[in-house]
Image (cartoon, rainbow, N blue to C red; front, top):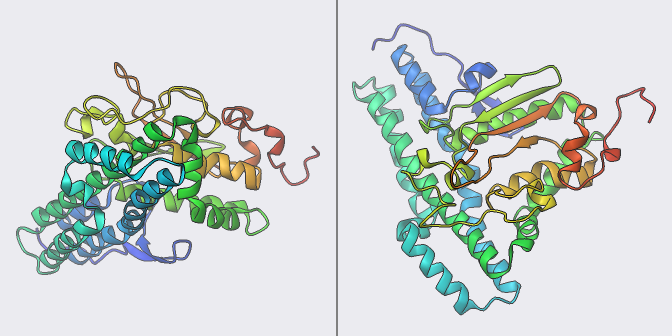
Length: 354
């Protein structure tokens, strides 16, 4: 590899995120960050490759935050519902046997290893070392391990909540865990705050940024498919790297966490907060609550519409697609009805009479 191209603008300040993020066309952003870093190495754009591998840490920061907080908060929520500490301790001990002490130690304990791997990769890129591509792949692999162990810890604690408090309470648990997100989401994406065109763009930016960090796809690069339709834009993960761990044997060494020996909970009855669908993994419930139920209740429309994966031991559906509508007035009736809401809440287009 030789330096033949000027450094591309691959990272820039993103106002909606309040921080640097990847820059480029939607086709470019559909590719995972580590993959694109390697492509820039091949093209001889060493500095761009370094900037990309470094931005992977920034993309992962939100997960670092919630994957450390949610397990602790989940335990507190379980005990606040009258479950004894001894019972939670016993369930946690069983979870530790299944997913390992390293996973149960939490993401914060492993975070320095990821940052160090990224630092080494960025240094190798800027120094134009022959092993730079291998260093980038090492950083990706380190993050995959850290991420997946953290997801198992979160999903395992949510499973304990279901087994001790009950499946019926799962929506309430996620409401508690995401209360801070709800308020920000409501304020930002209200039609009274900004035009929907601005909100839609920001929602799409947040999708690609967040799912790069989840390392979507069977290759665990963070790749996704972007689908352009007349009334909406879709982002397809096949599978997602977080909830997908409950469902997809291809990213769990043949042991999806909803199956044996883990048996992490999926819905066994219809609930508004899980699209009234049986087989929704307990982790995926938070996507329904954050993107559909809560915004419909507070704003009158879903901010993102999700075709969710479902668990079936013989034939799980592991593909997940998030849709952002170009106009919230175009969201179909069934999207409201499947979460127990009335489409009468849907906004009208300017000039329409309702």
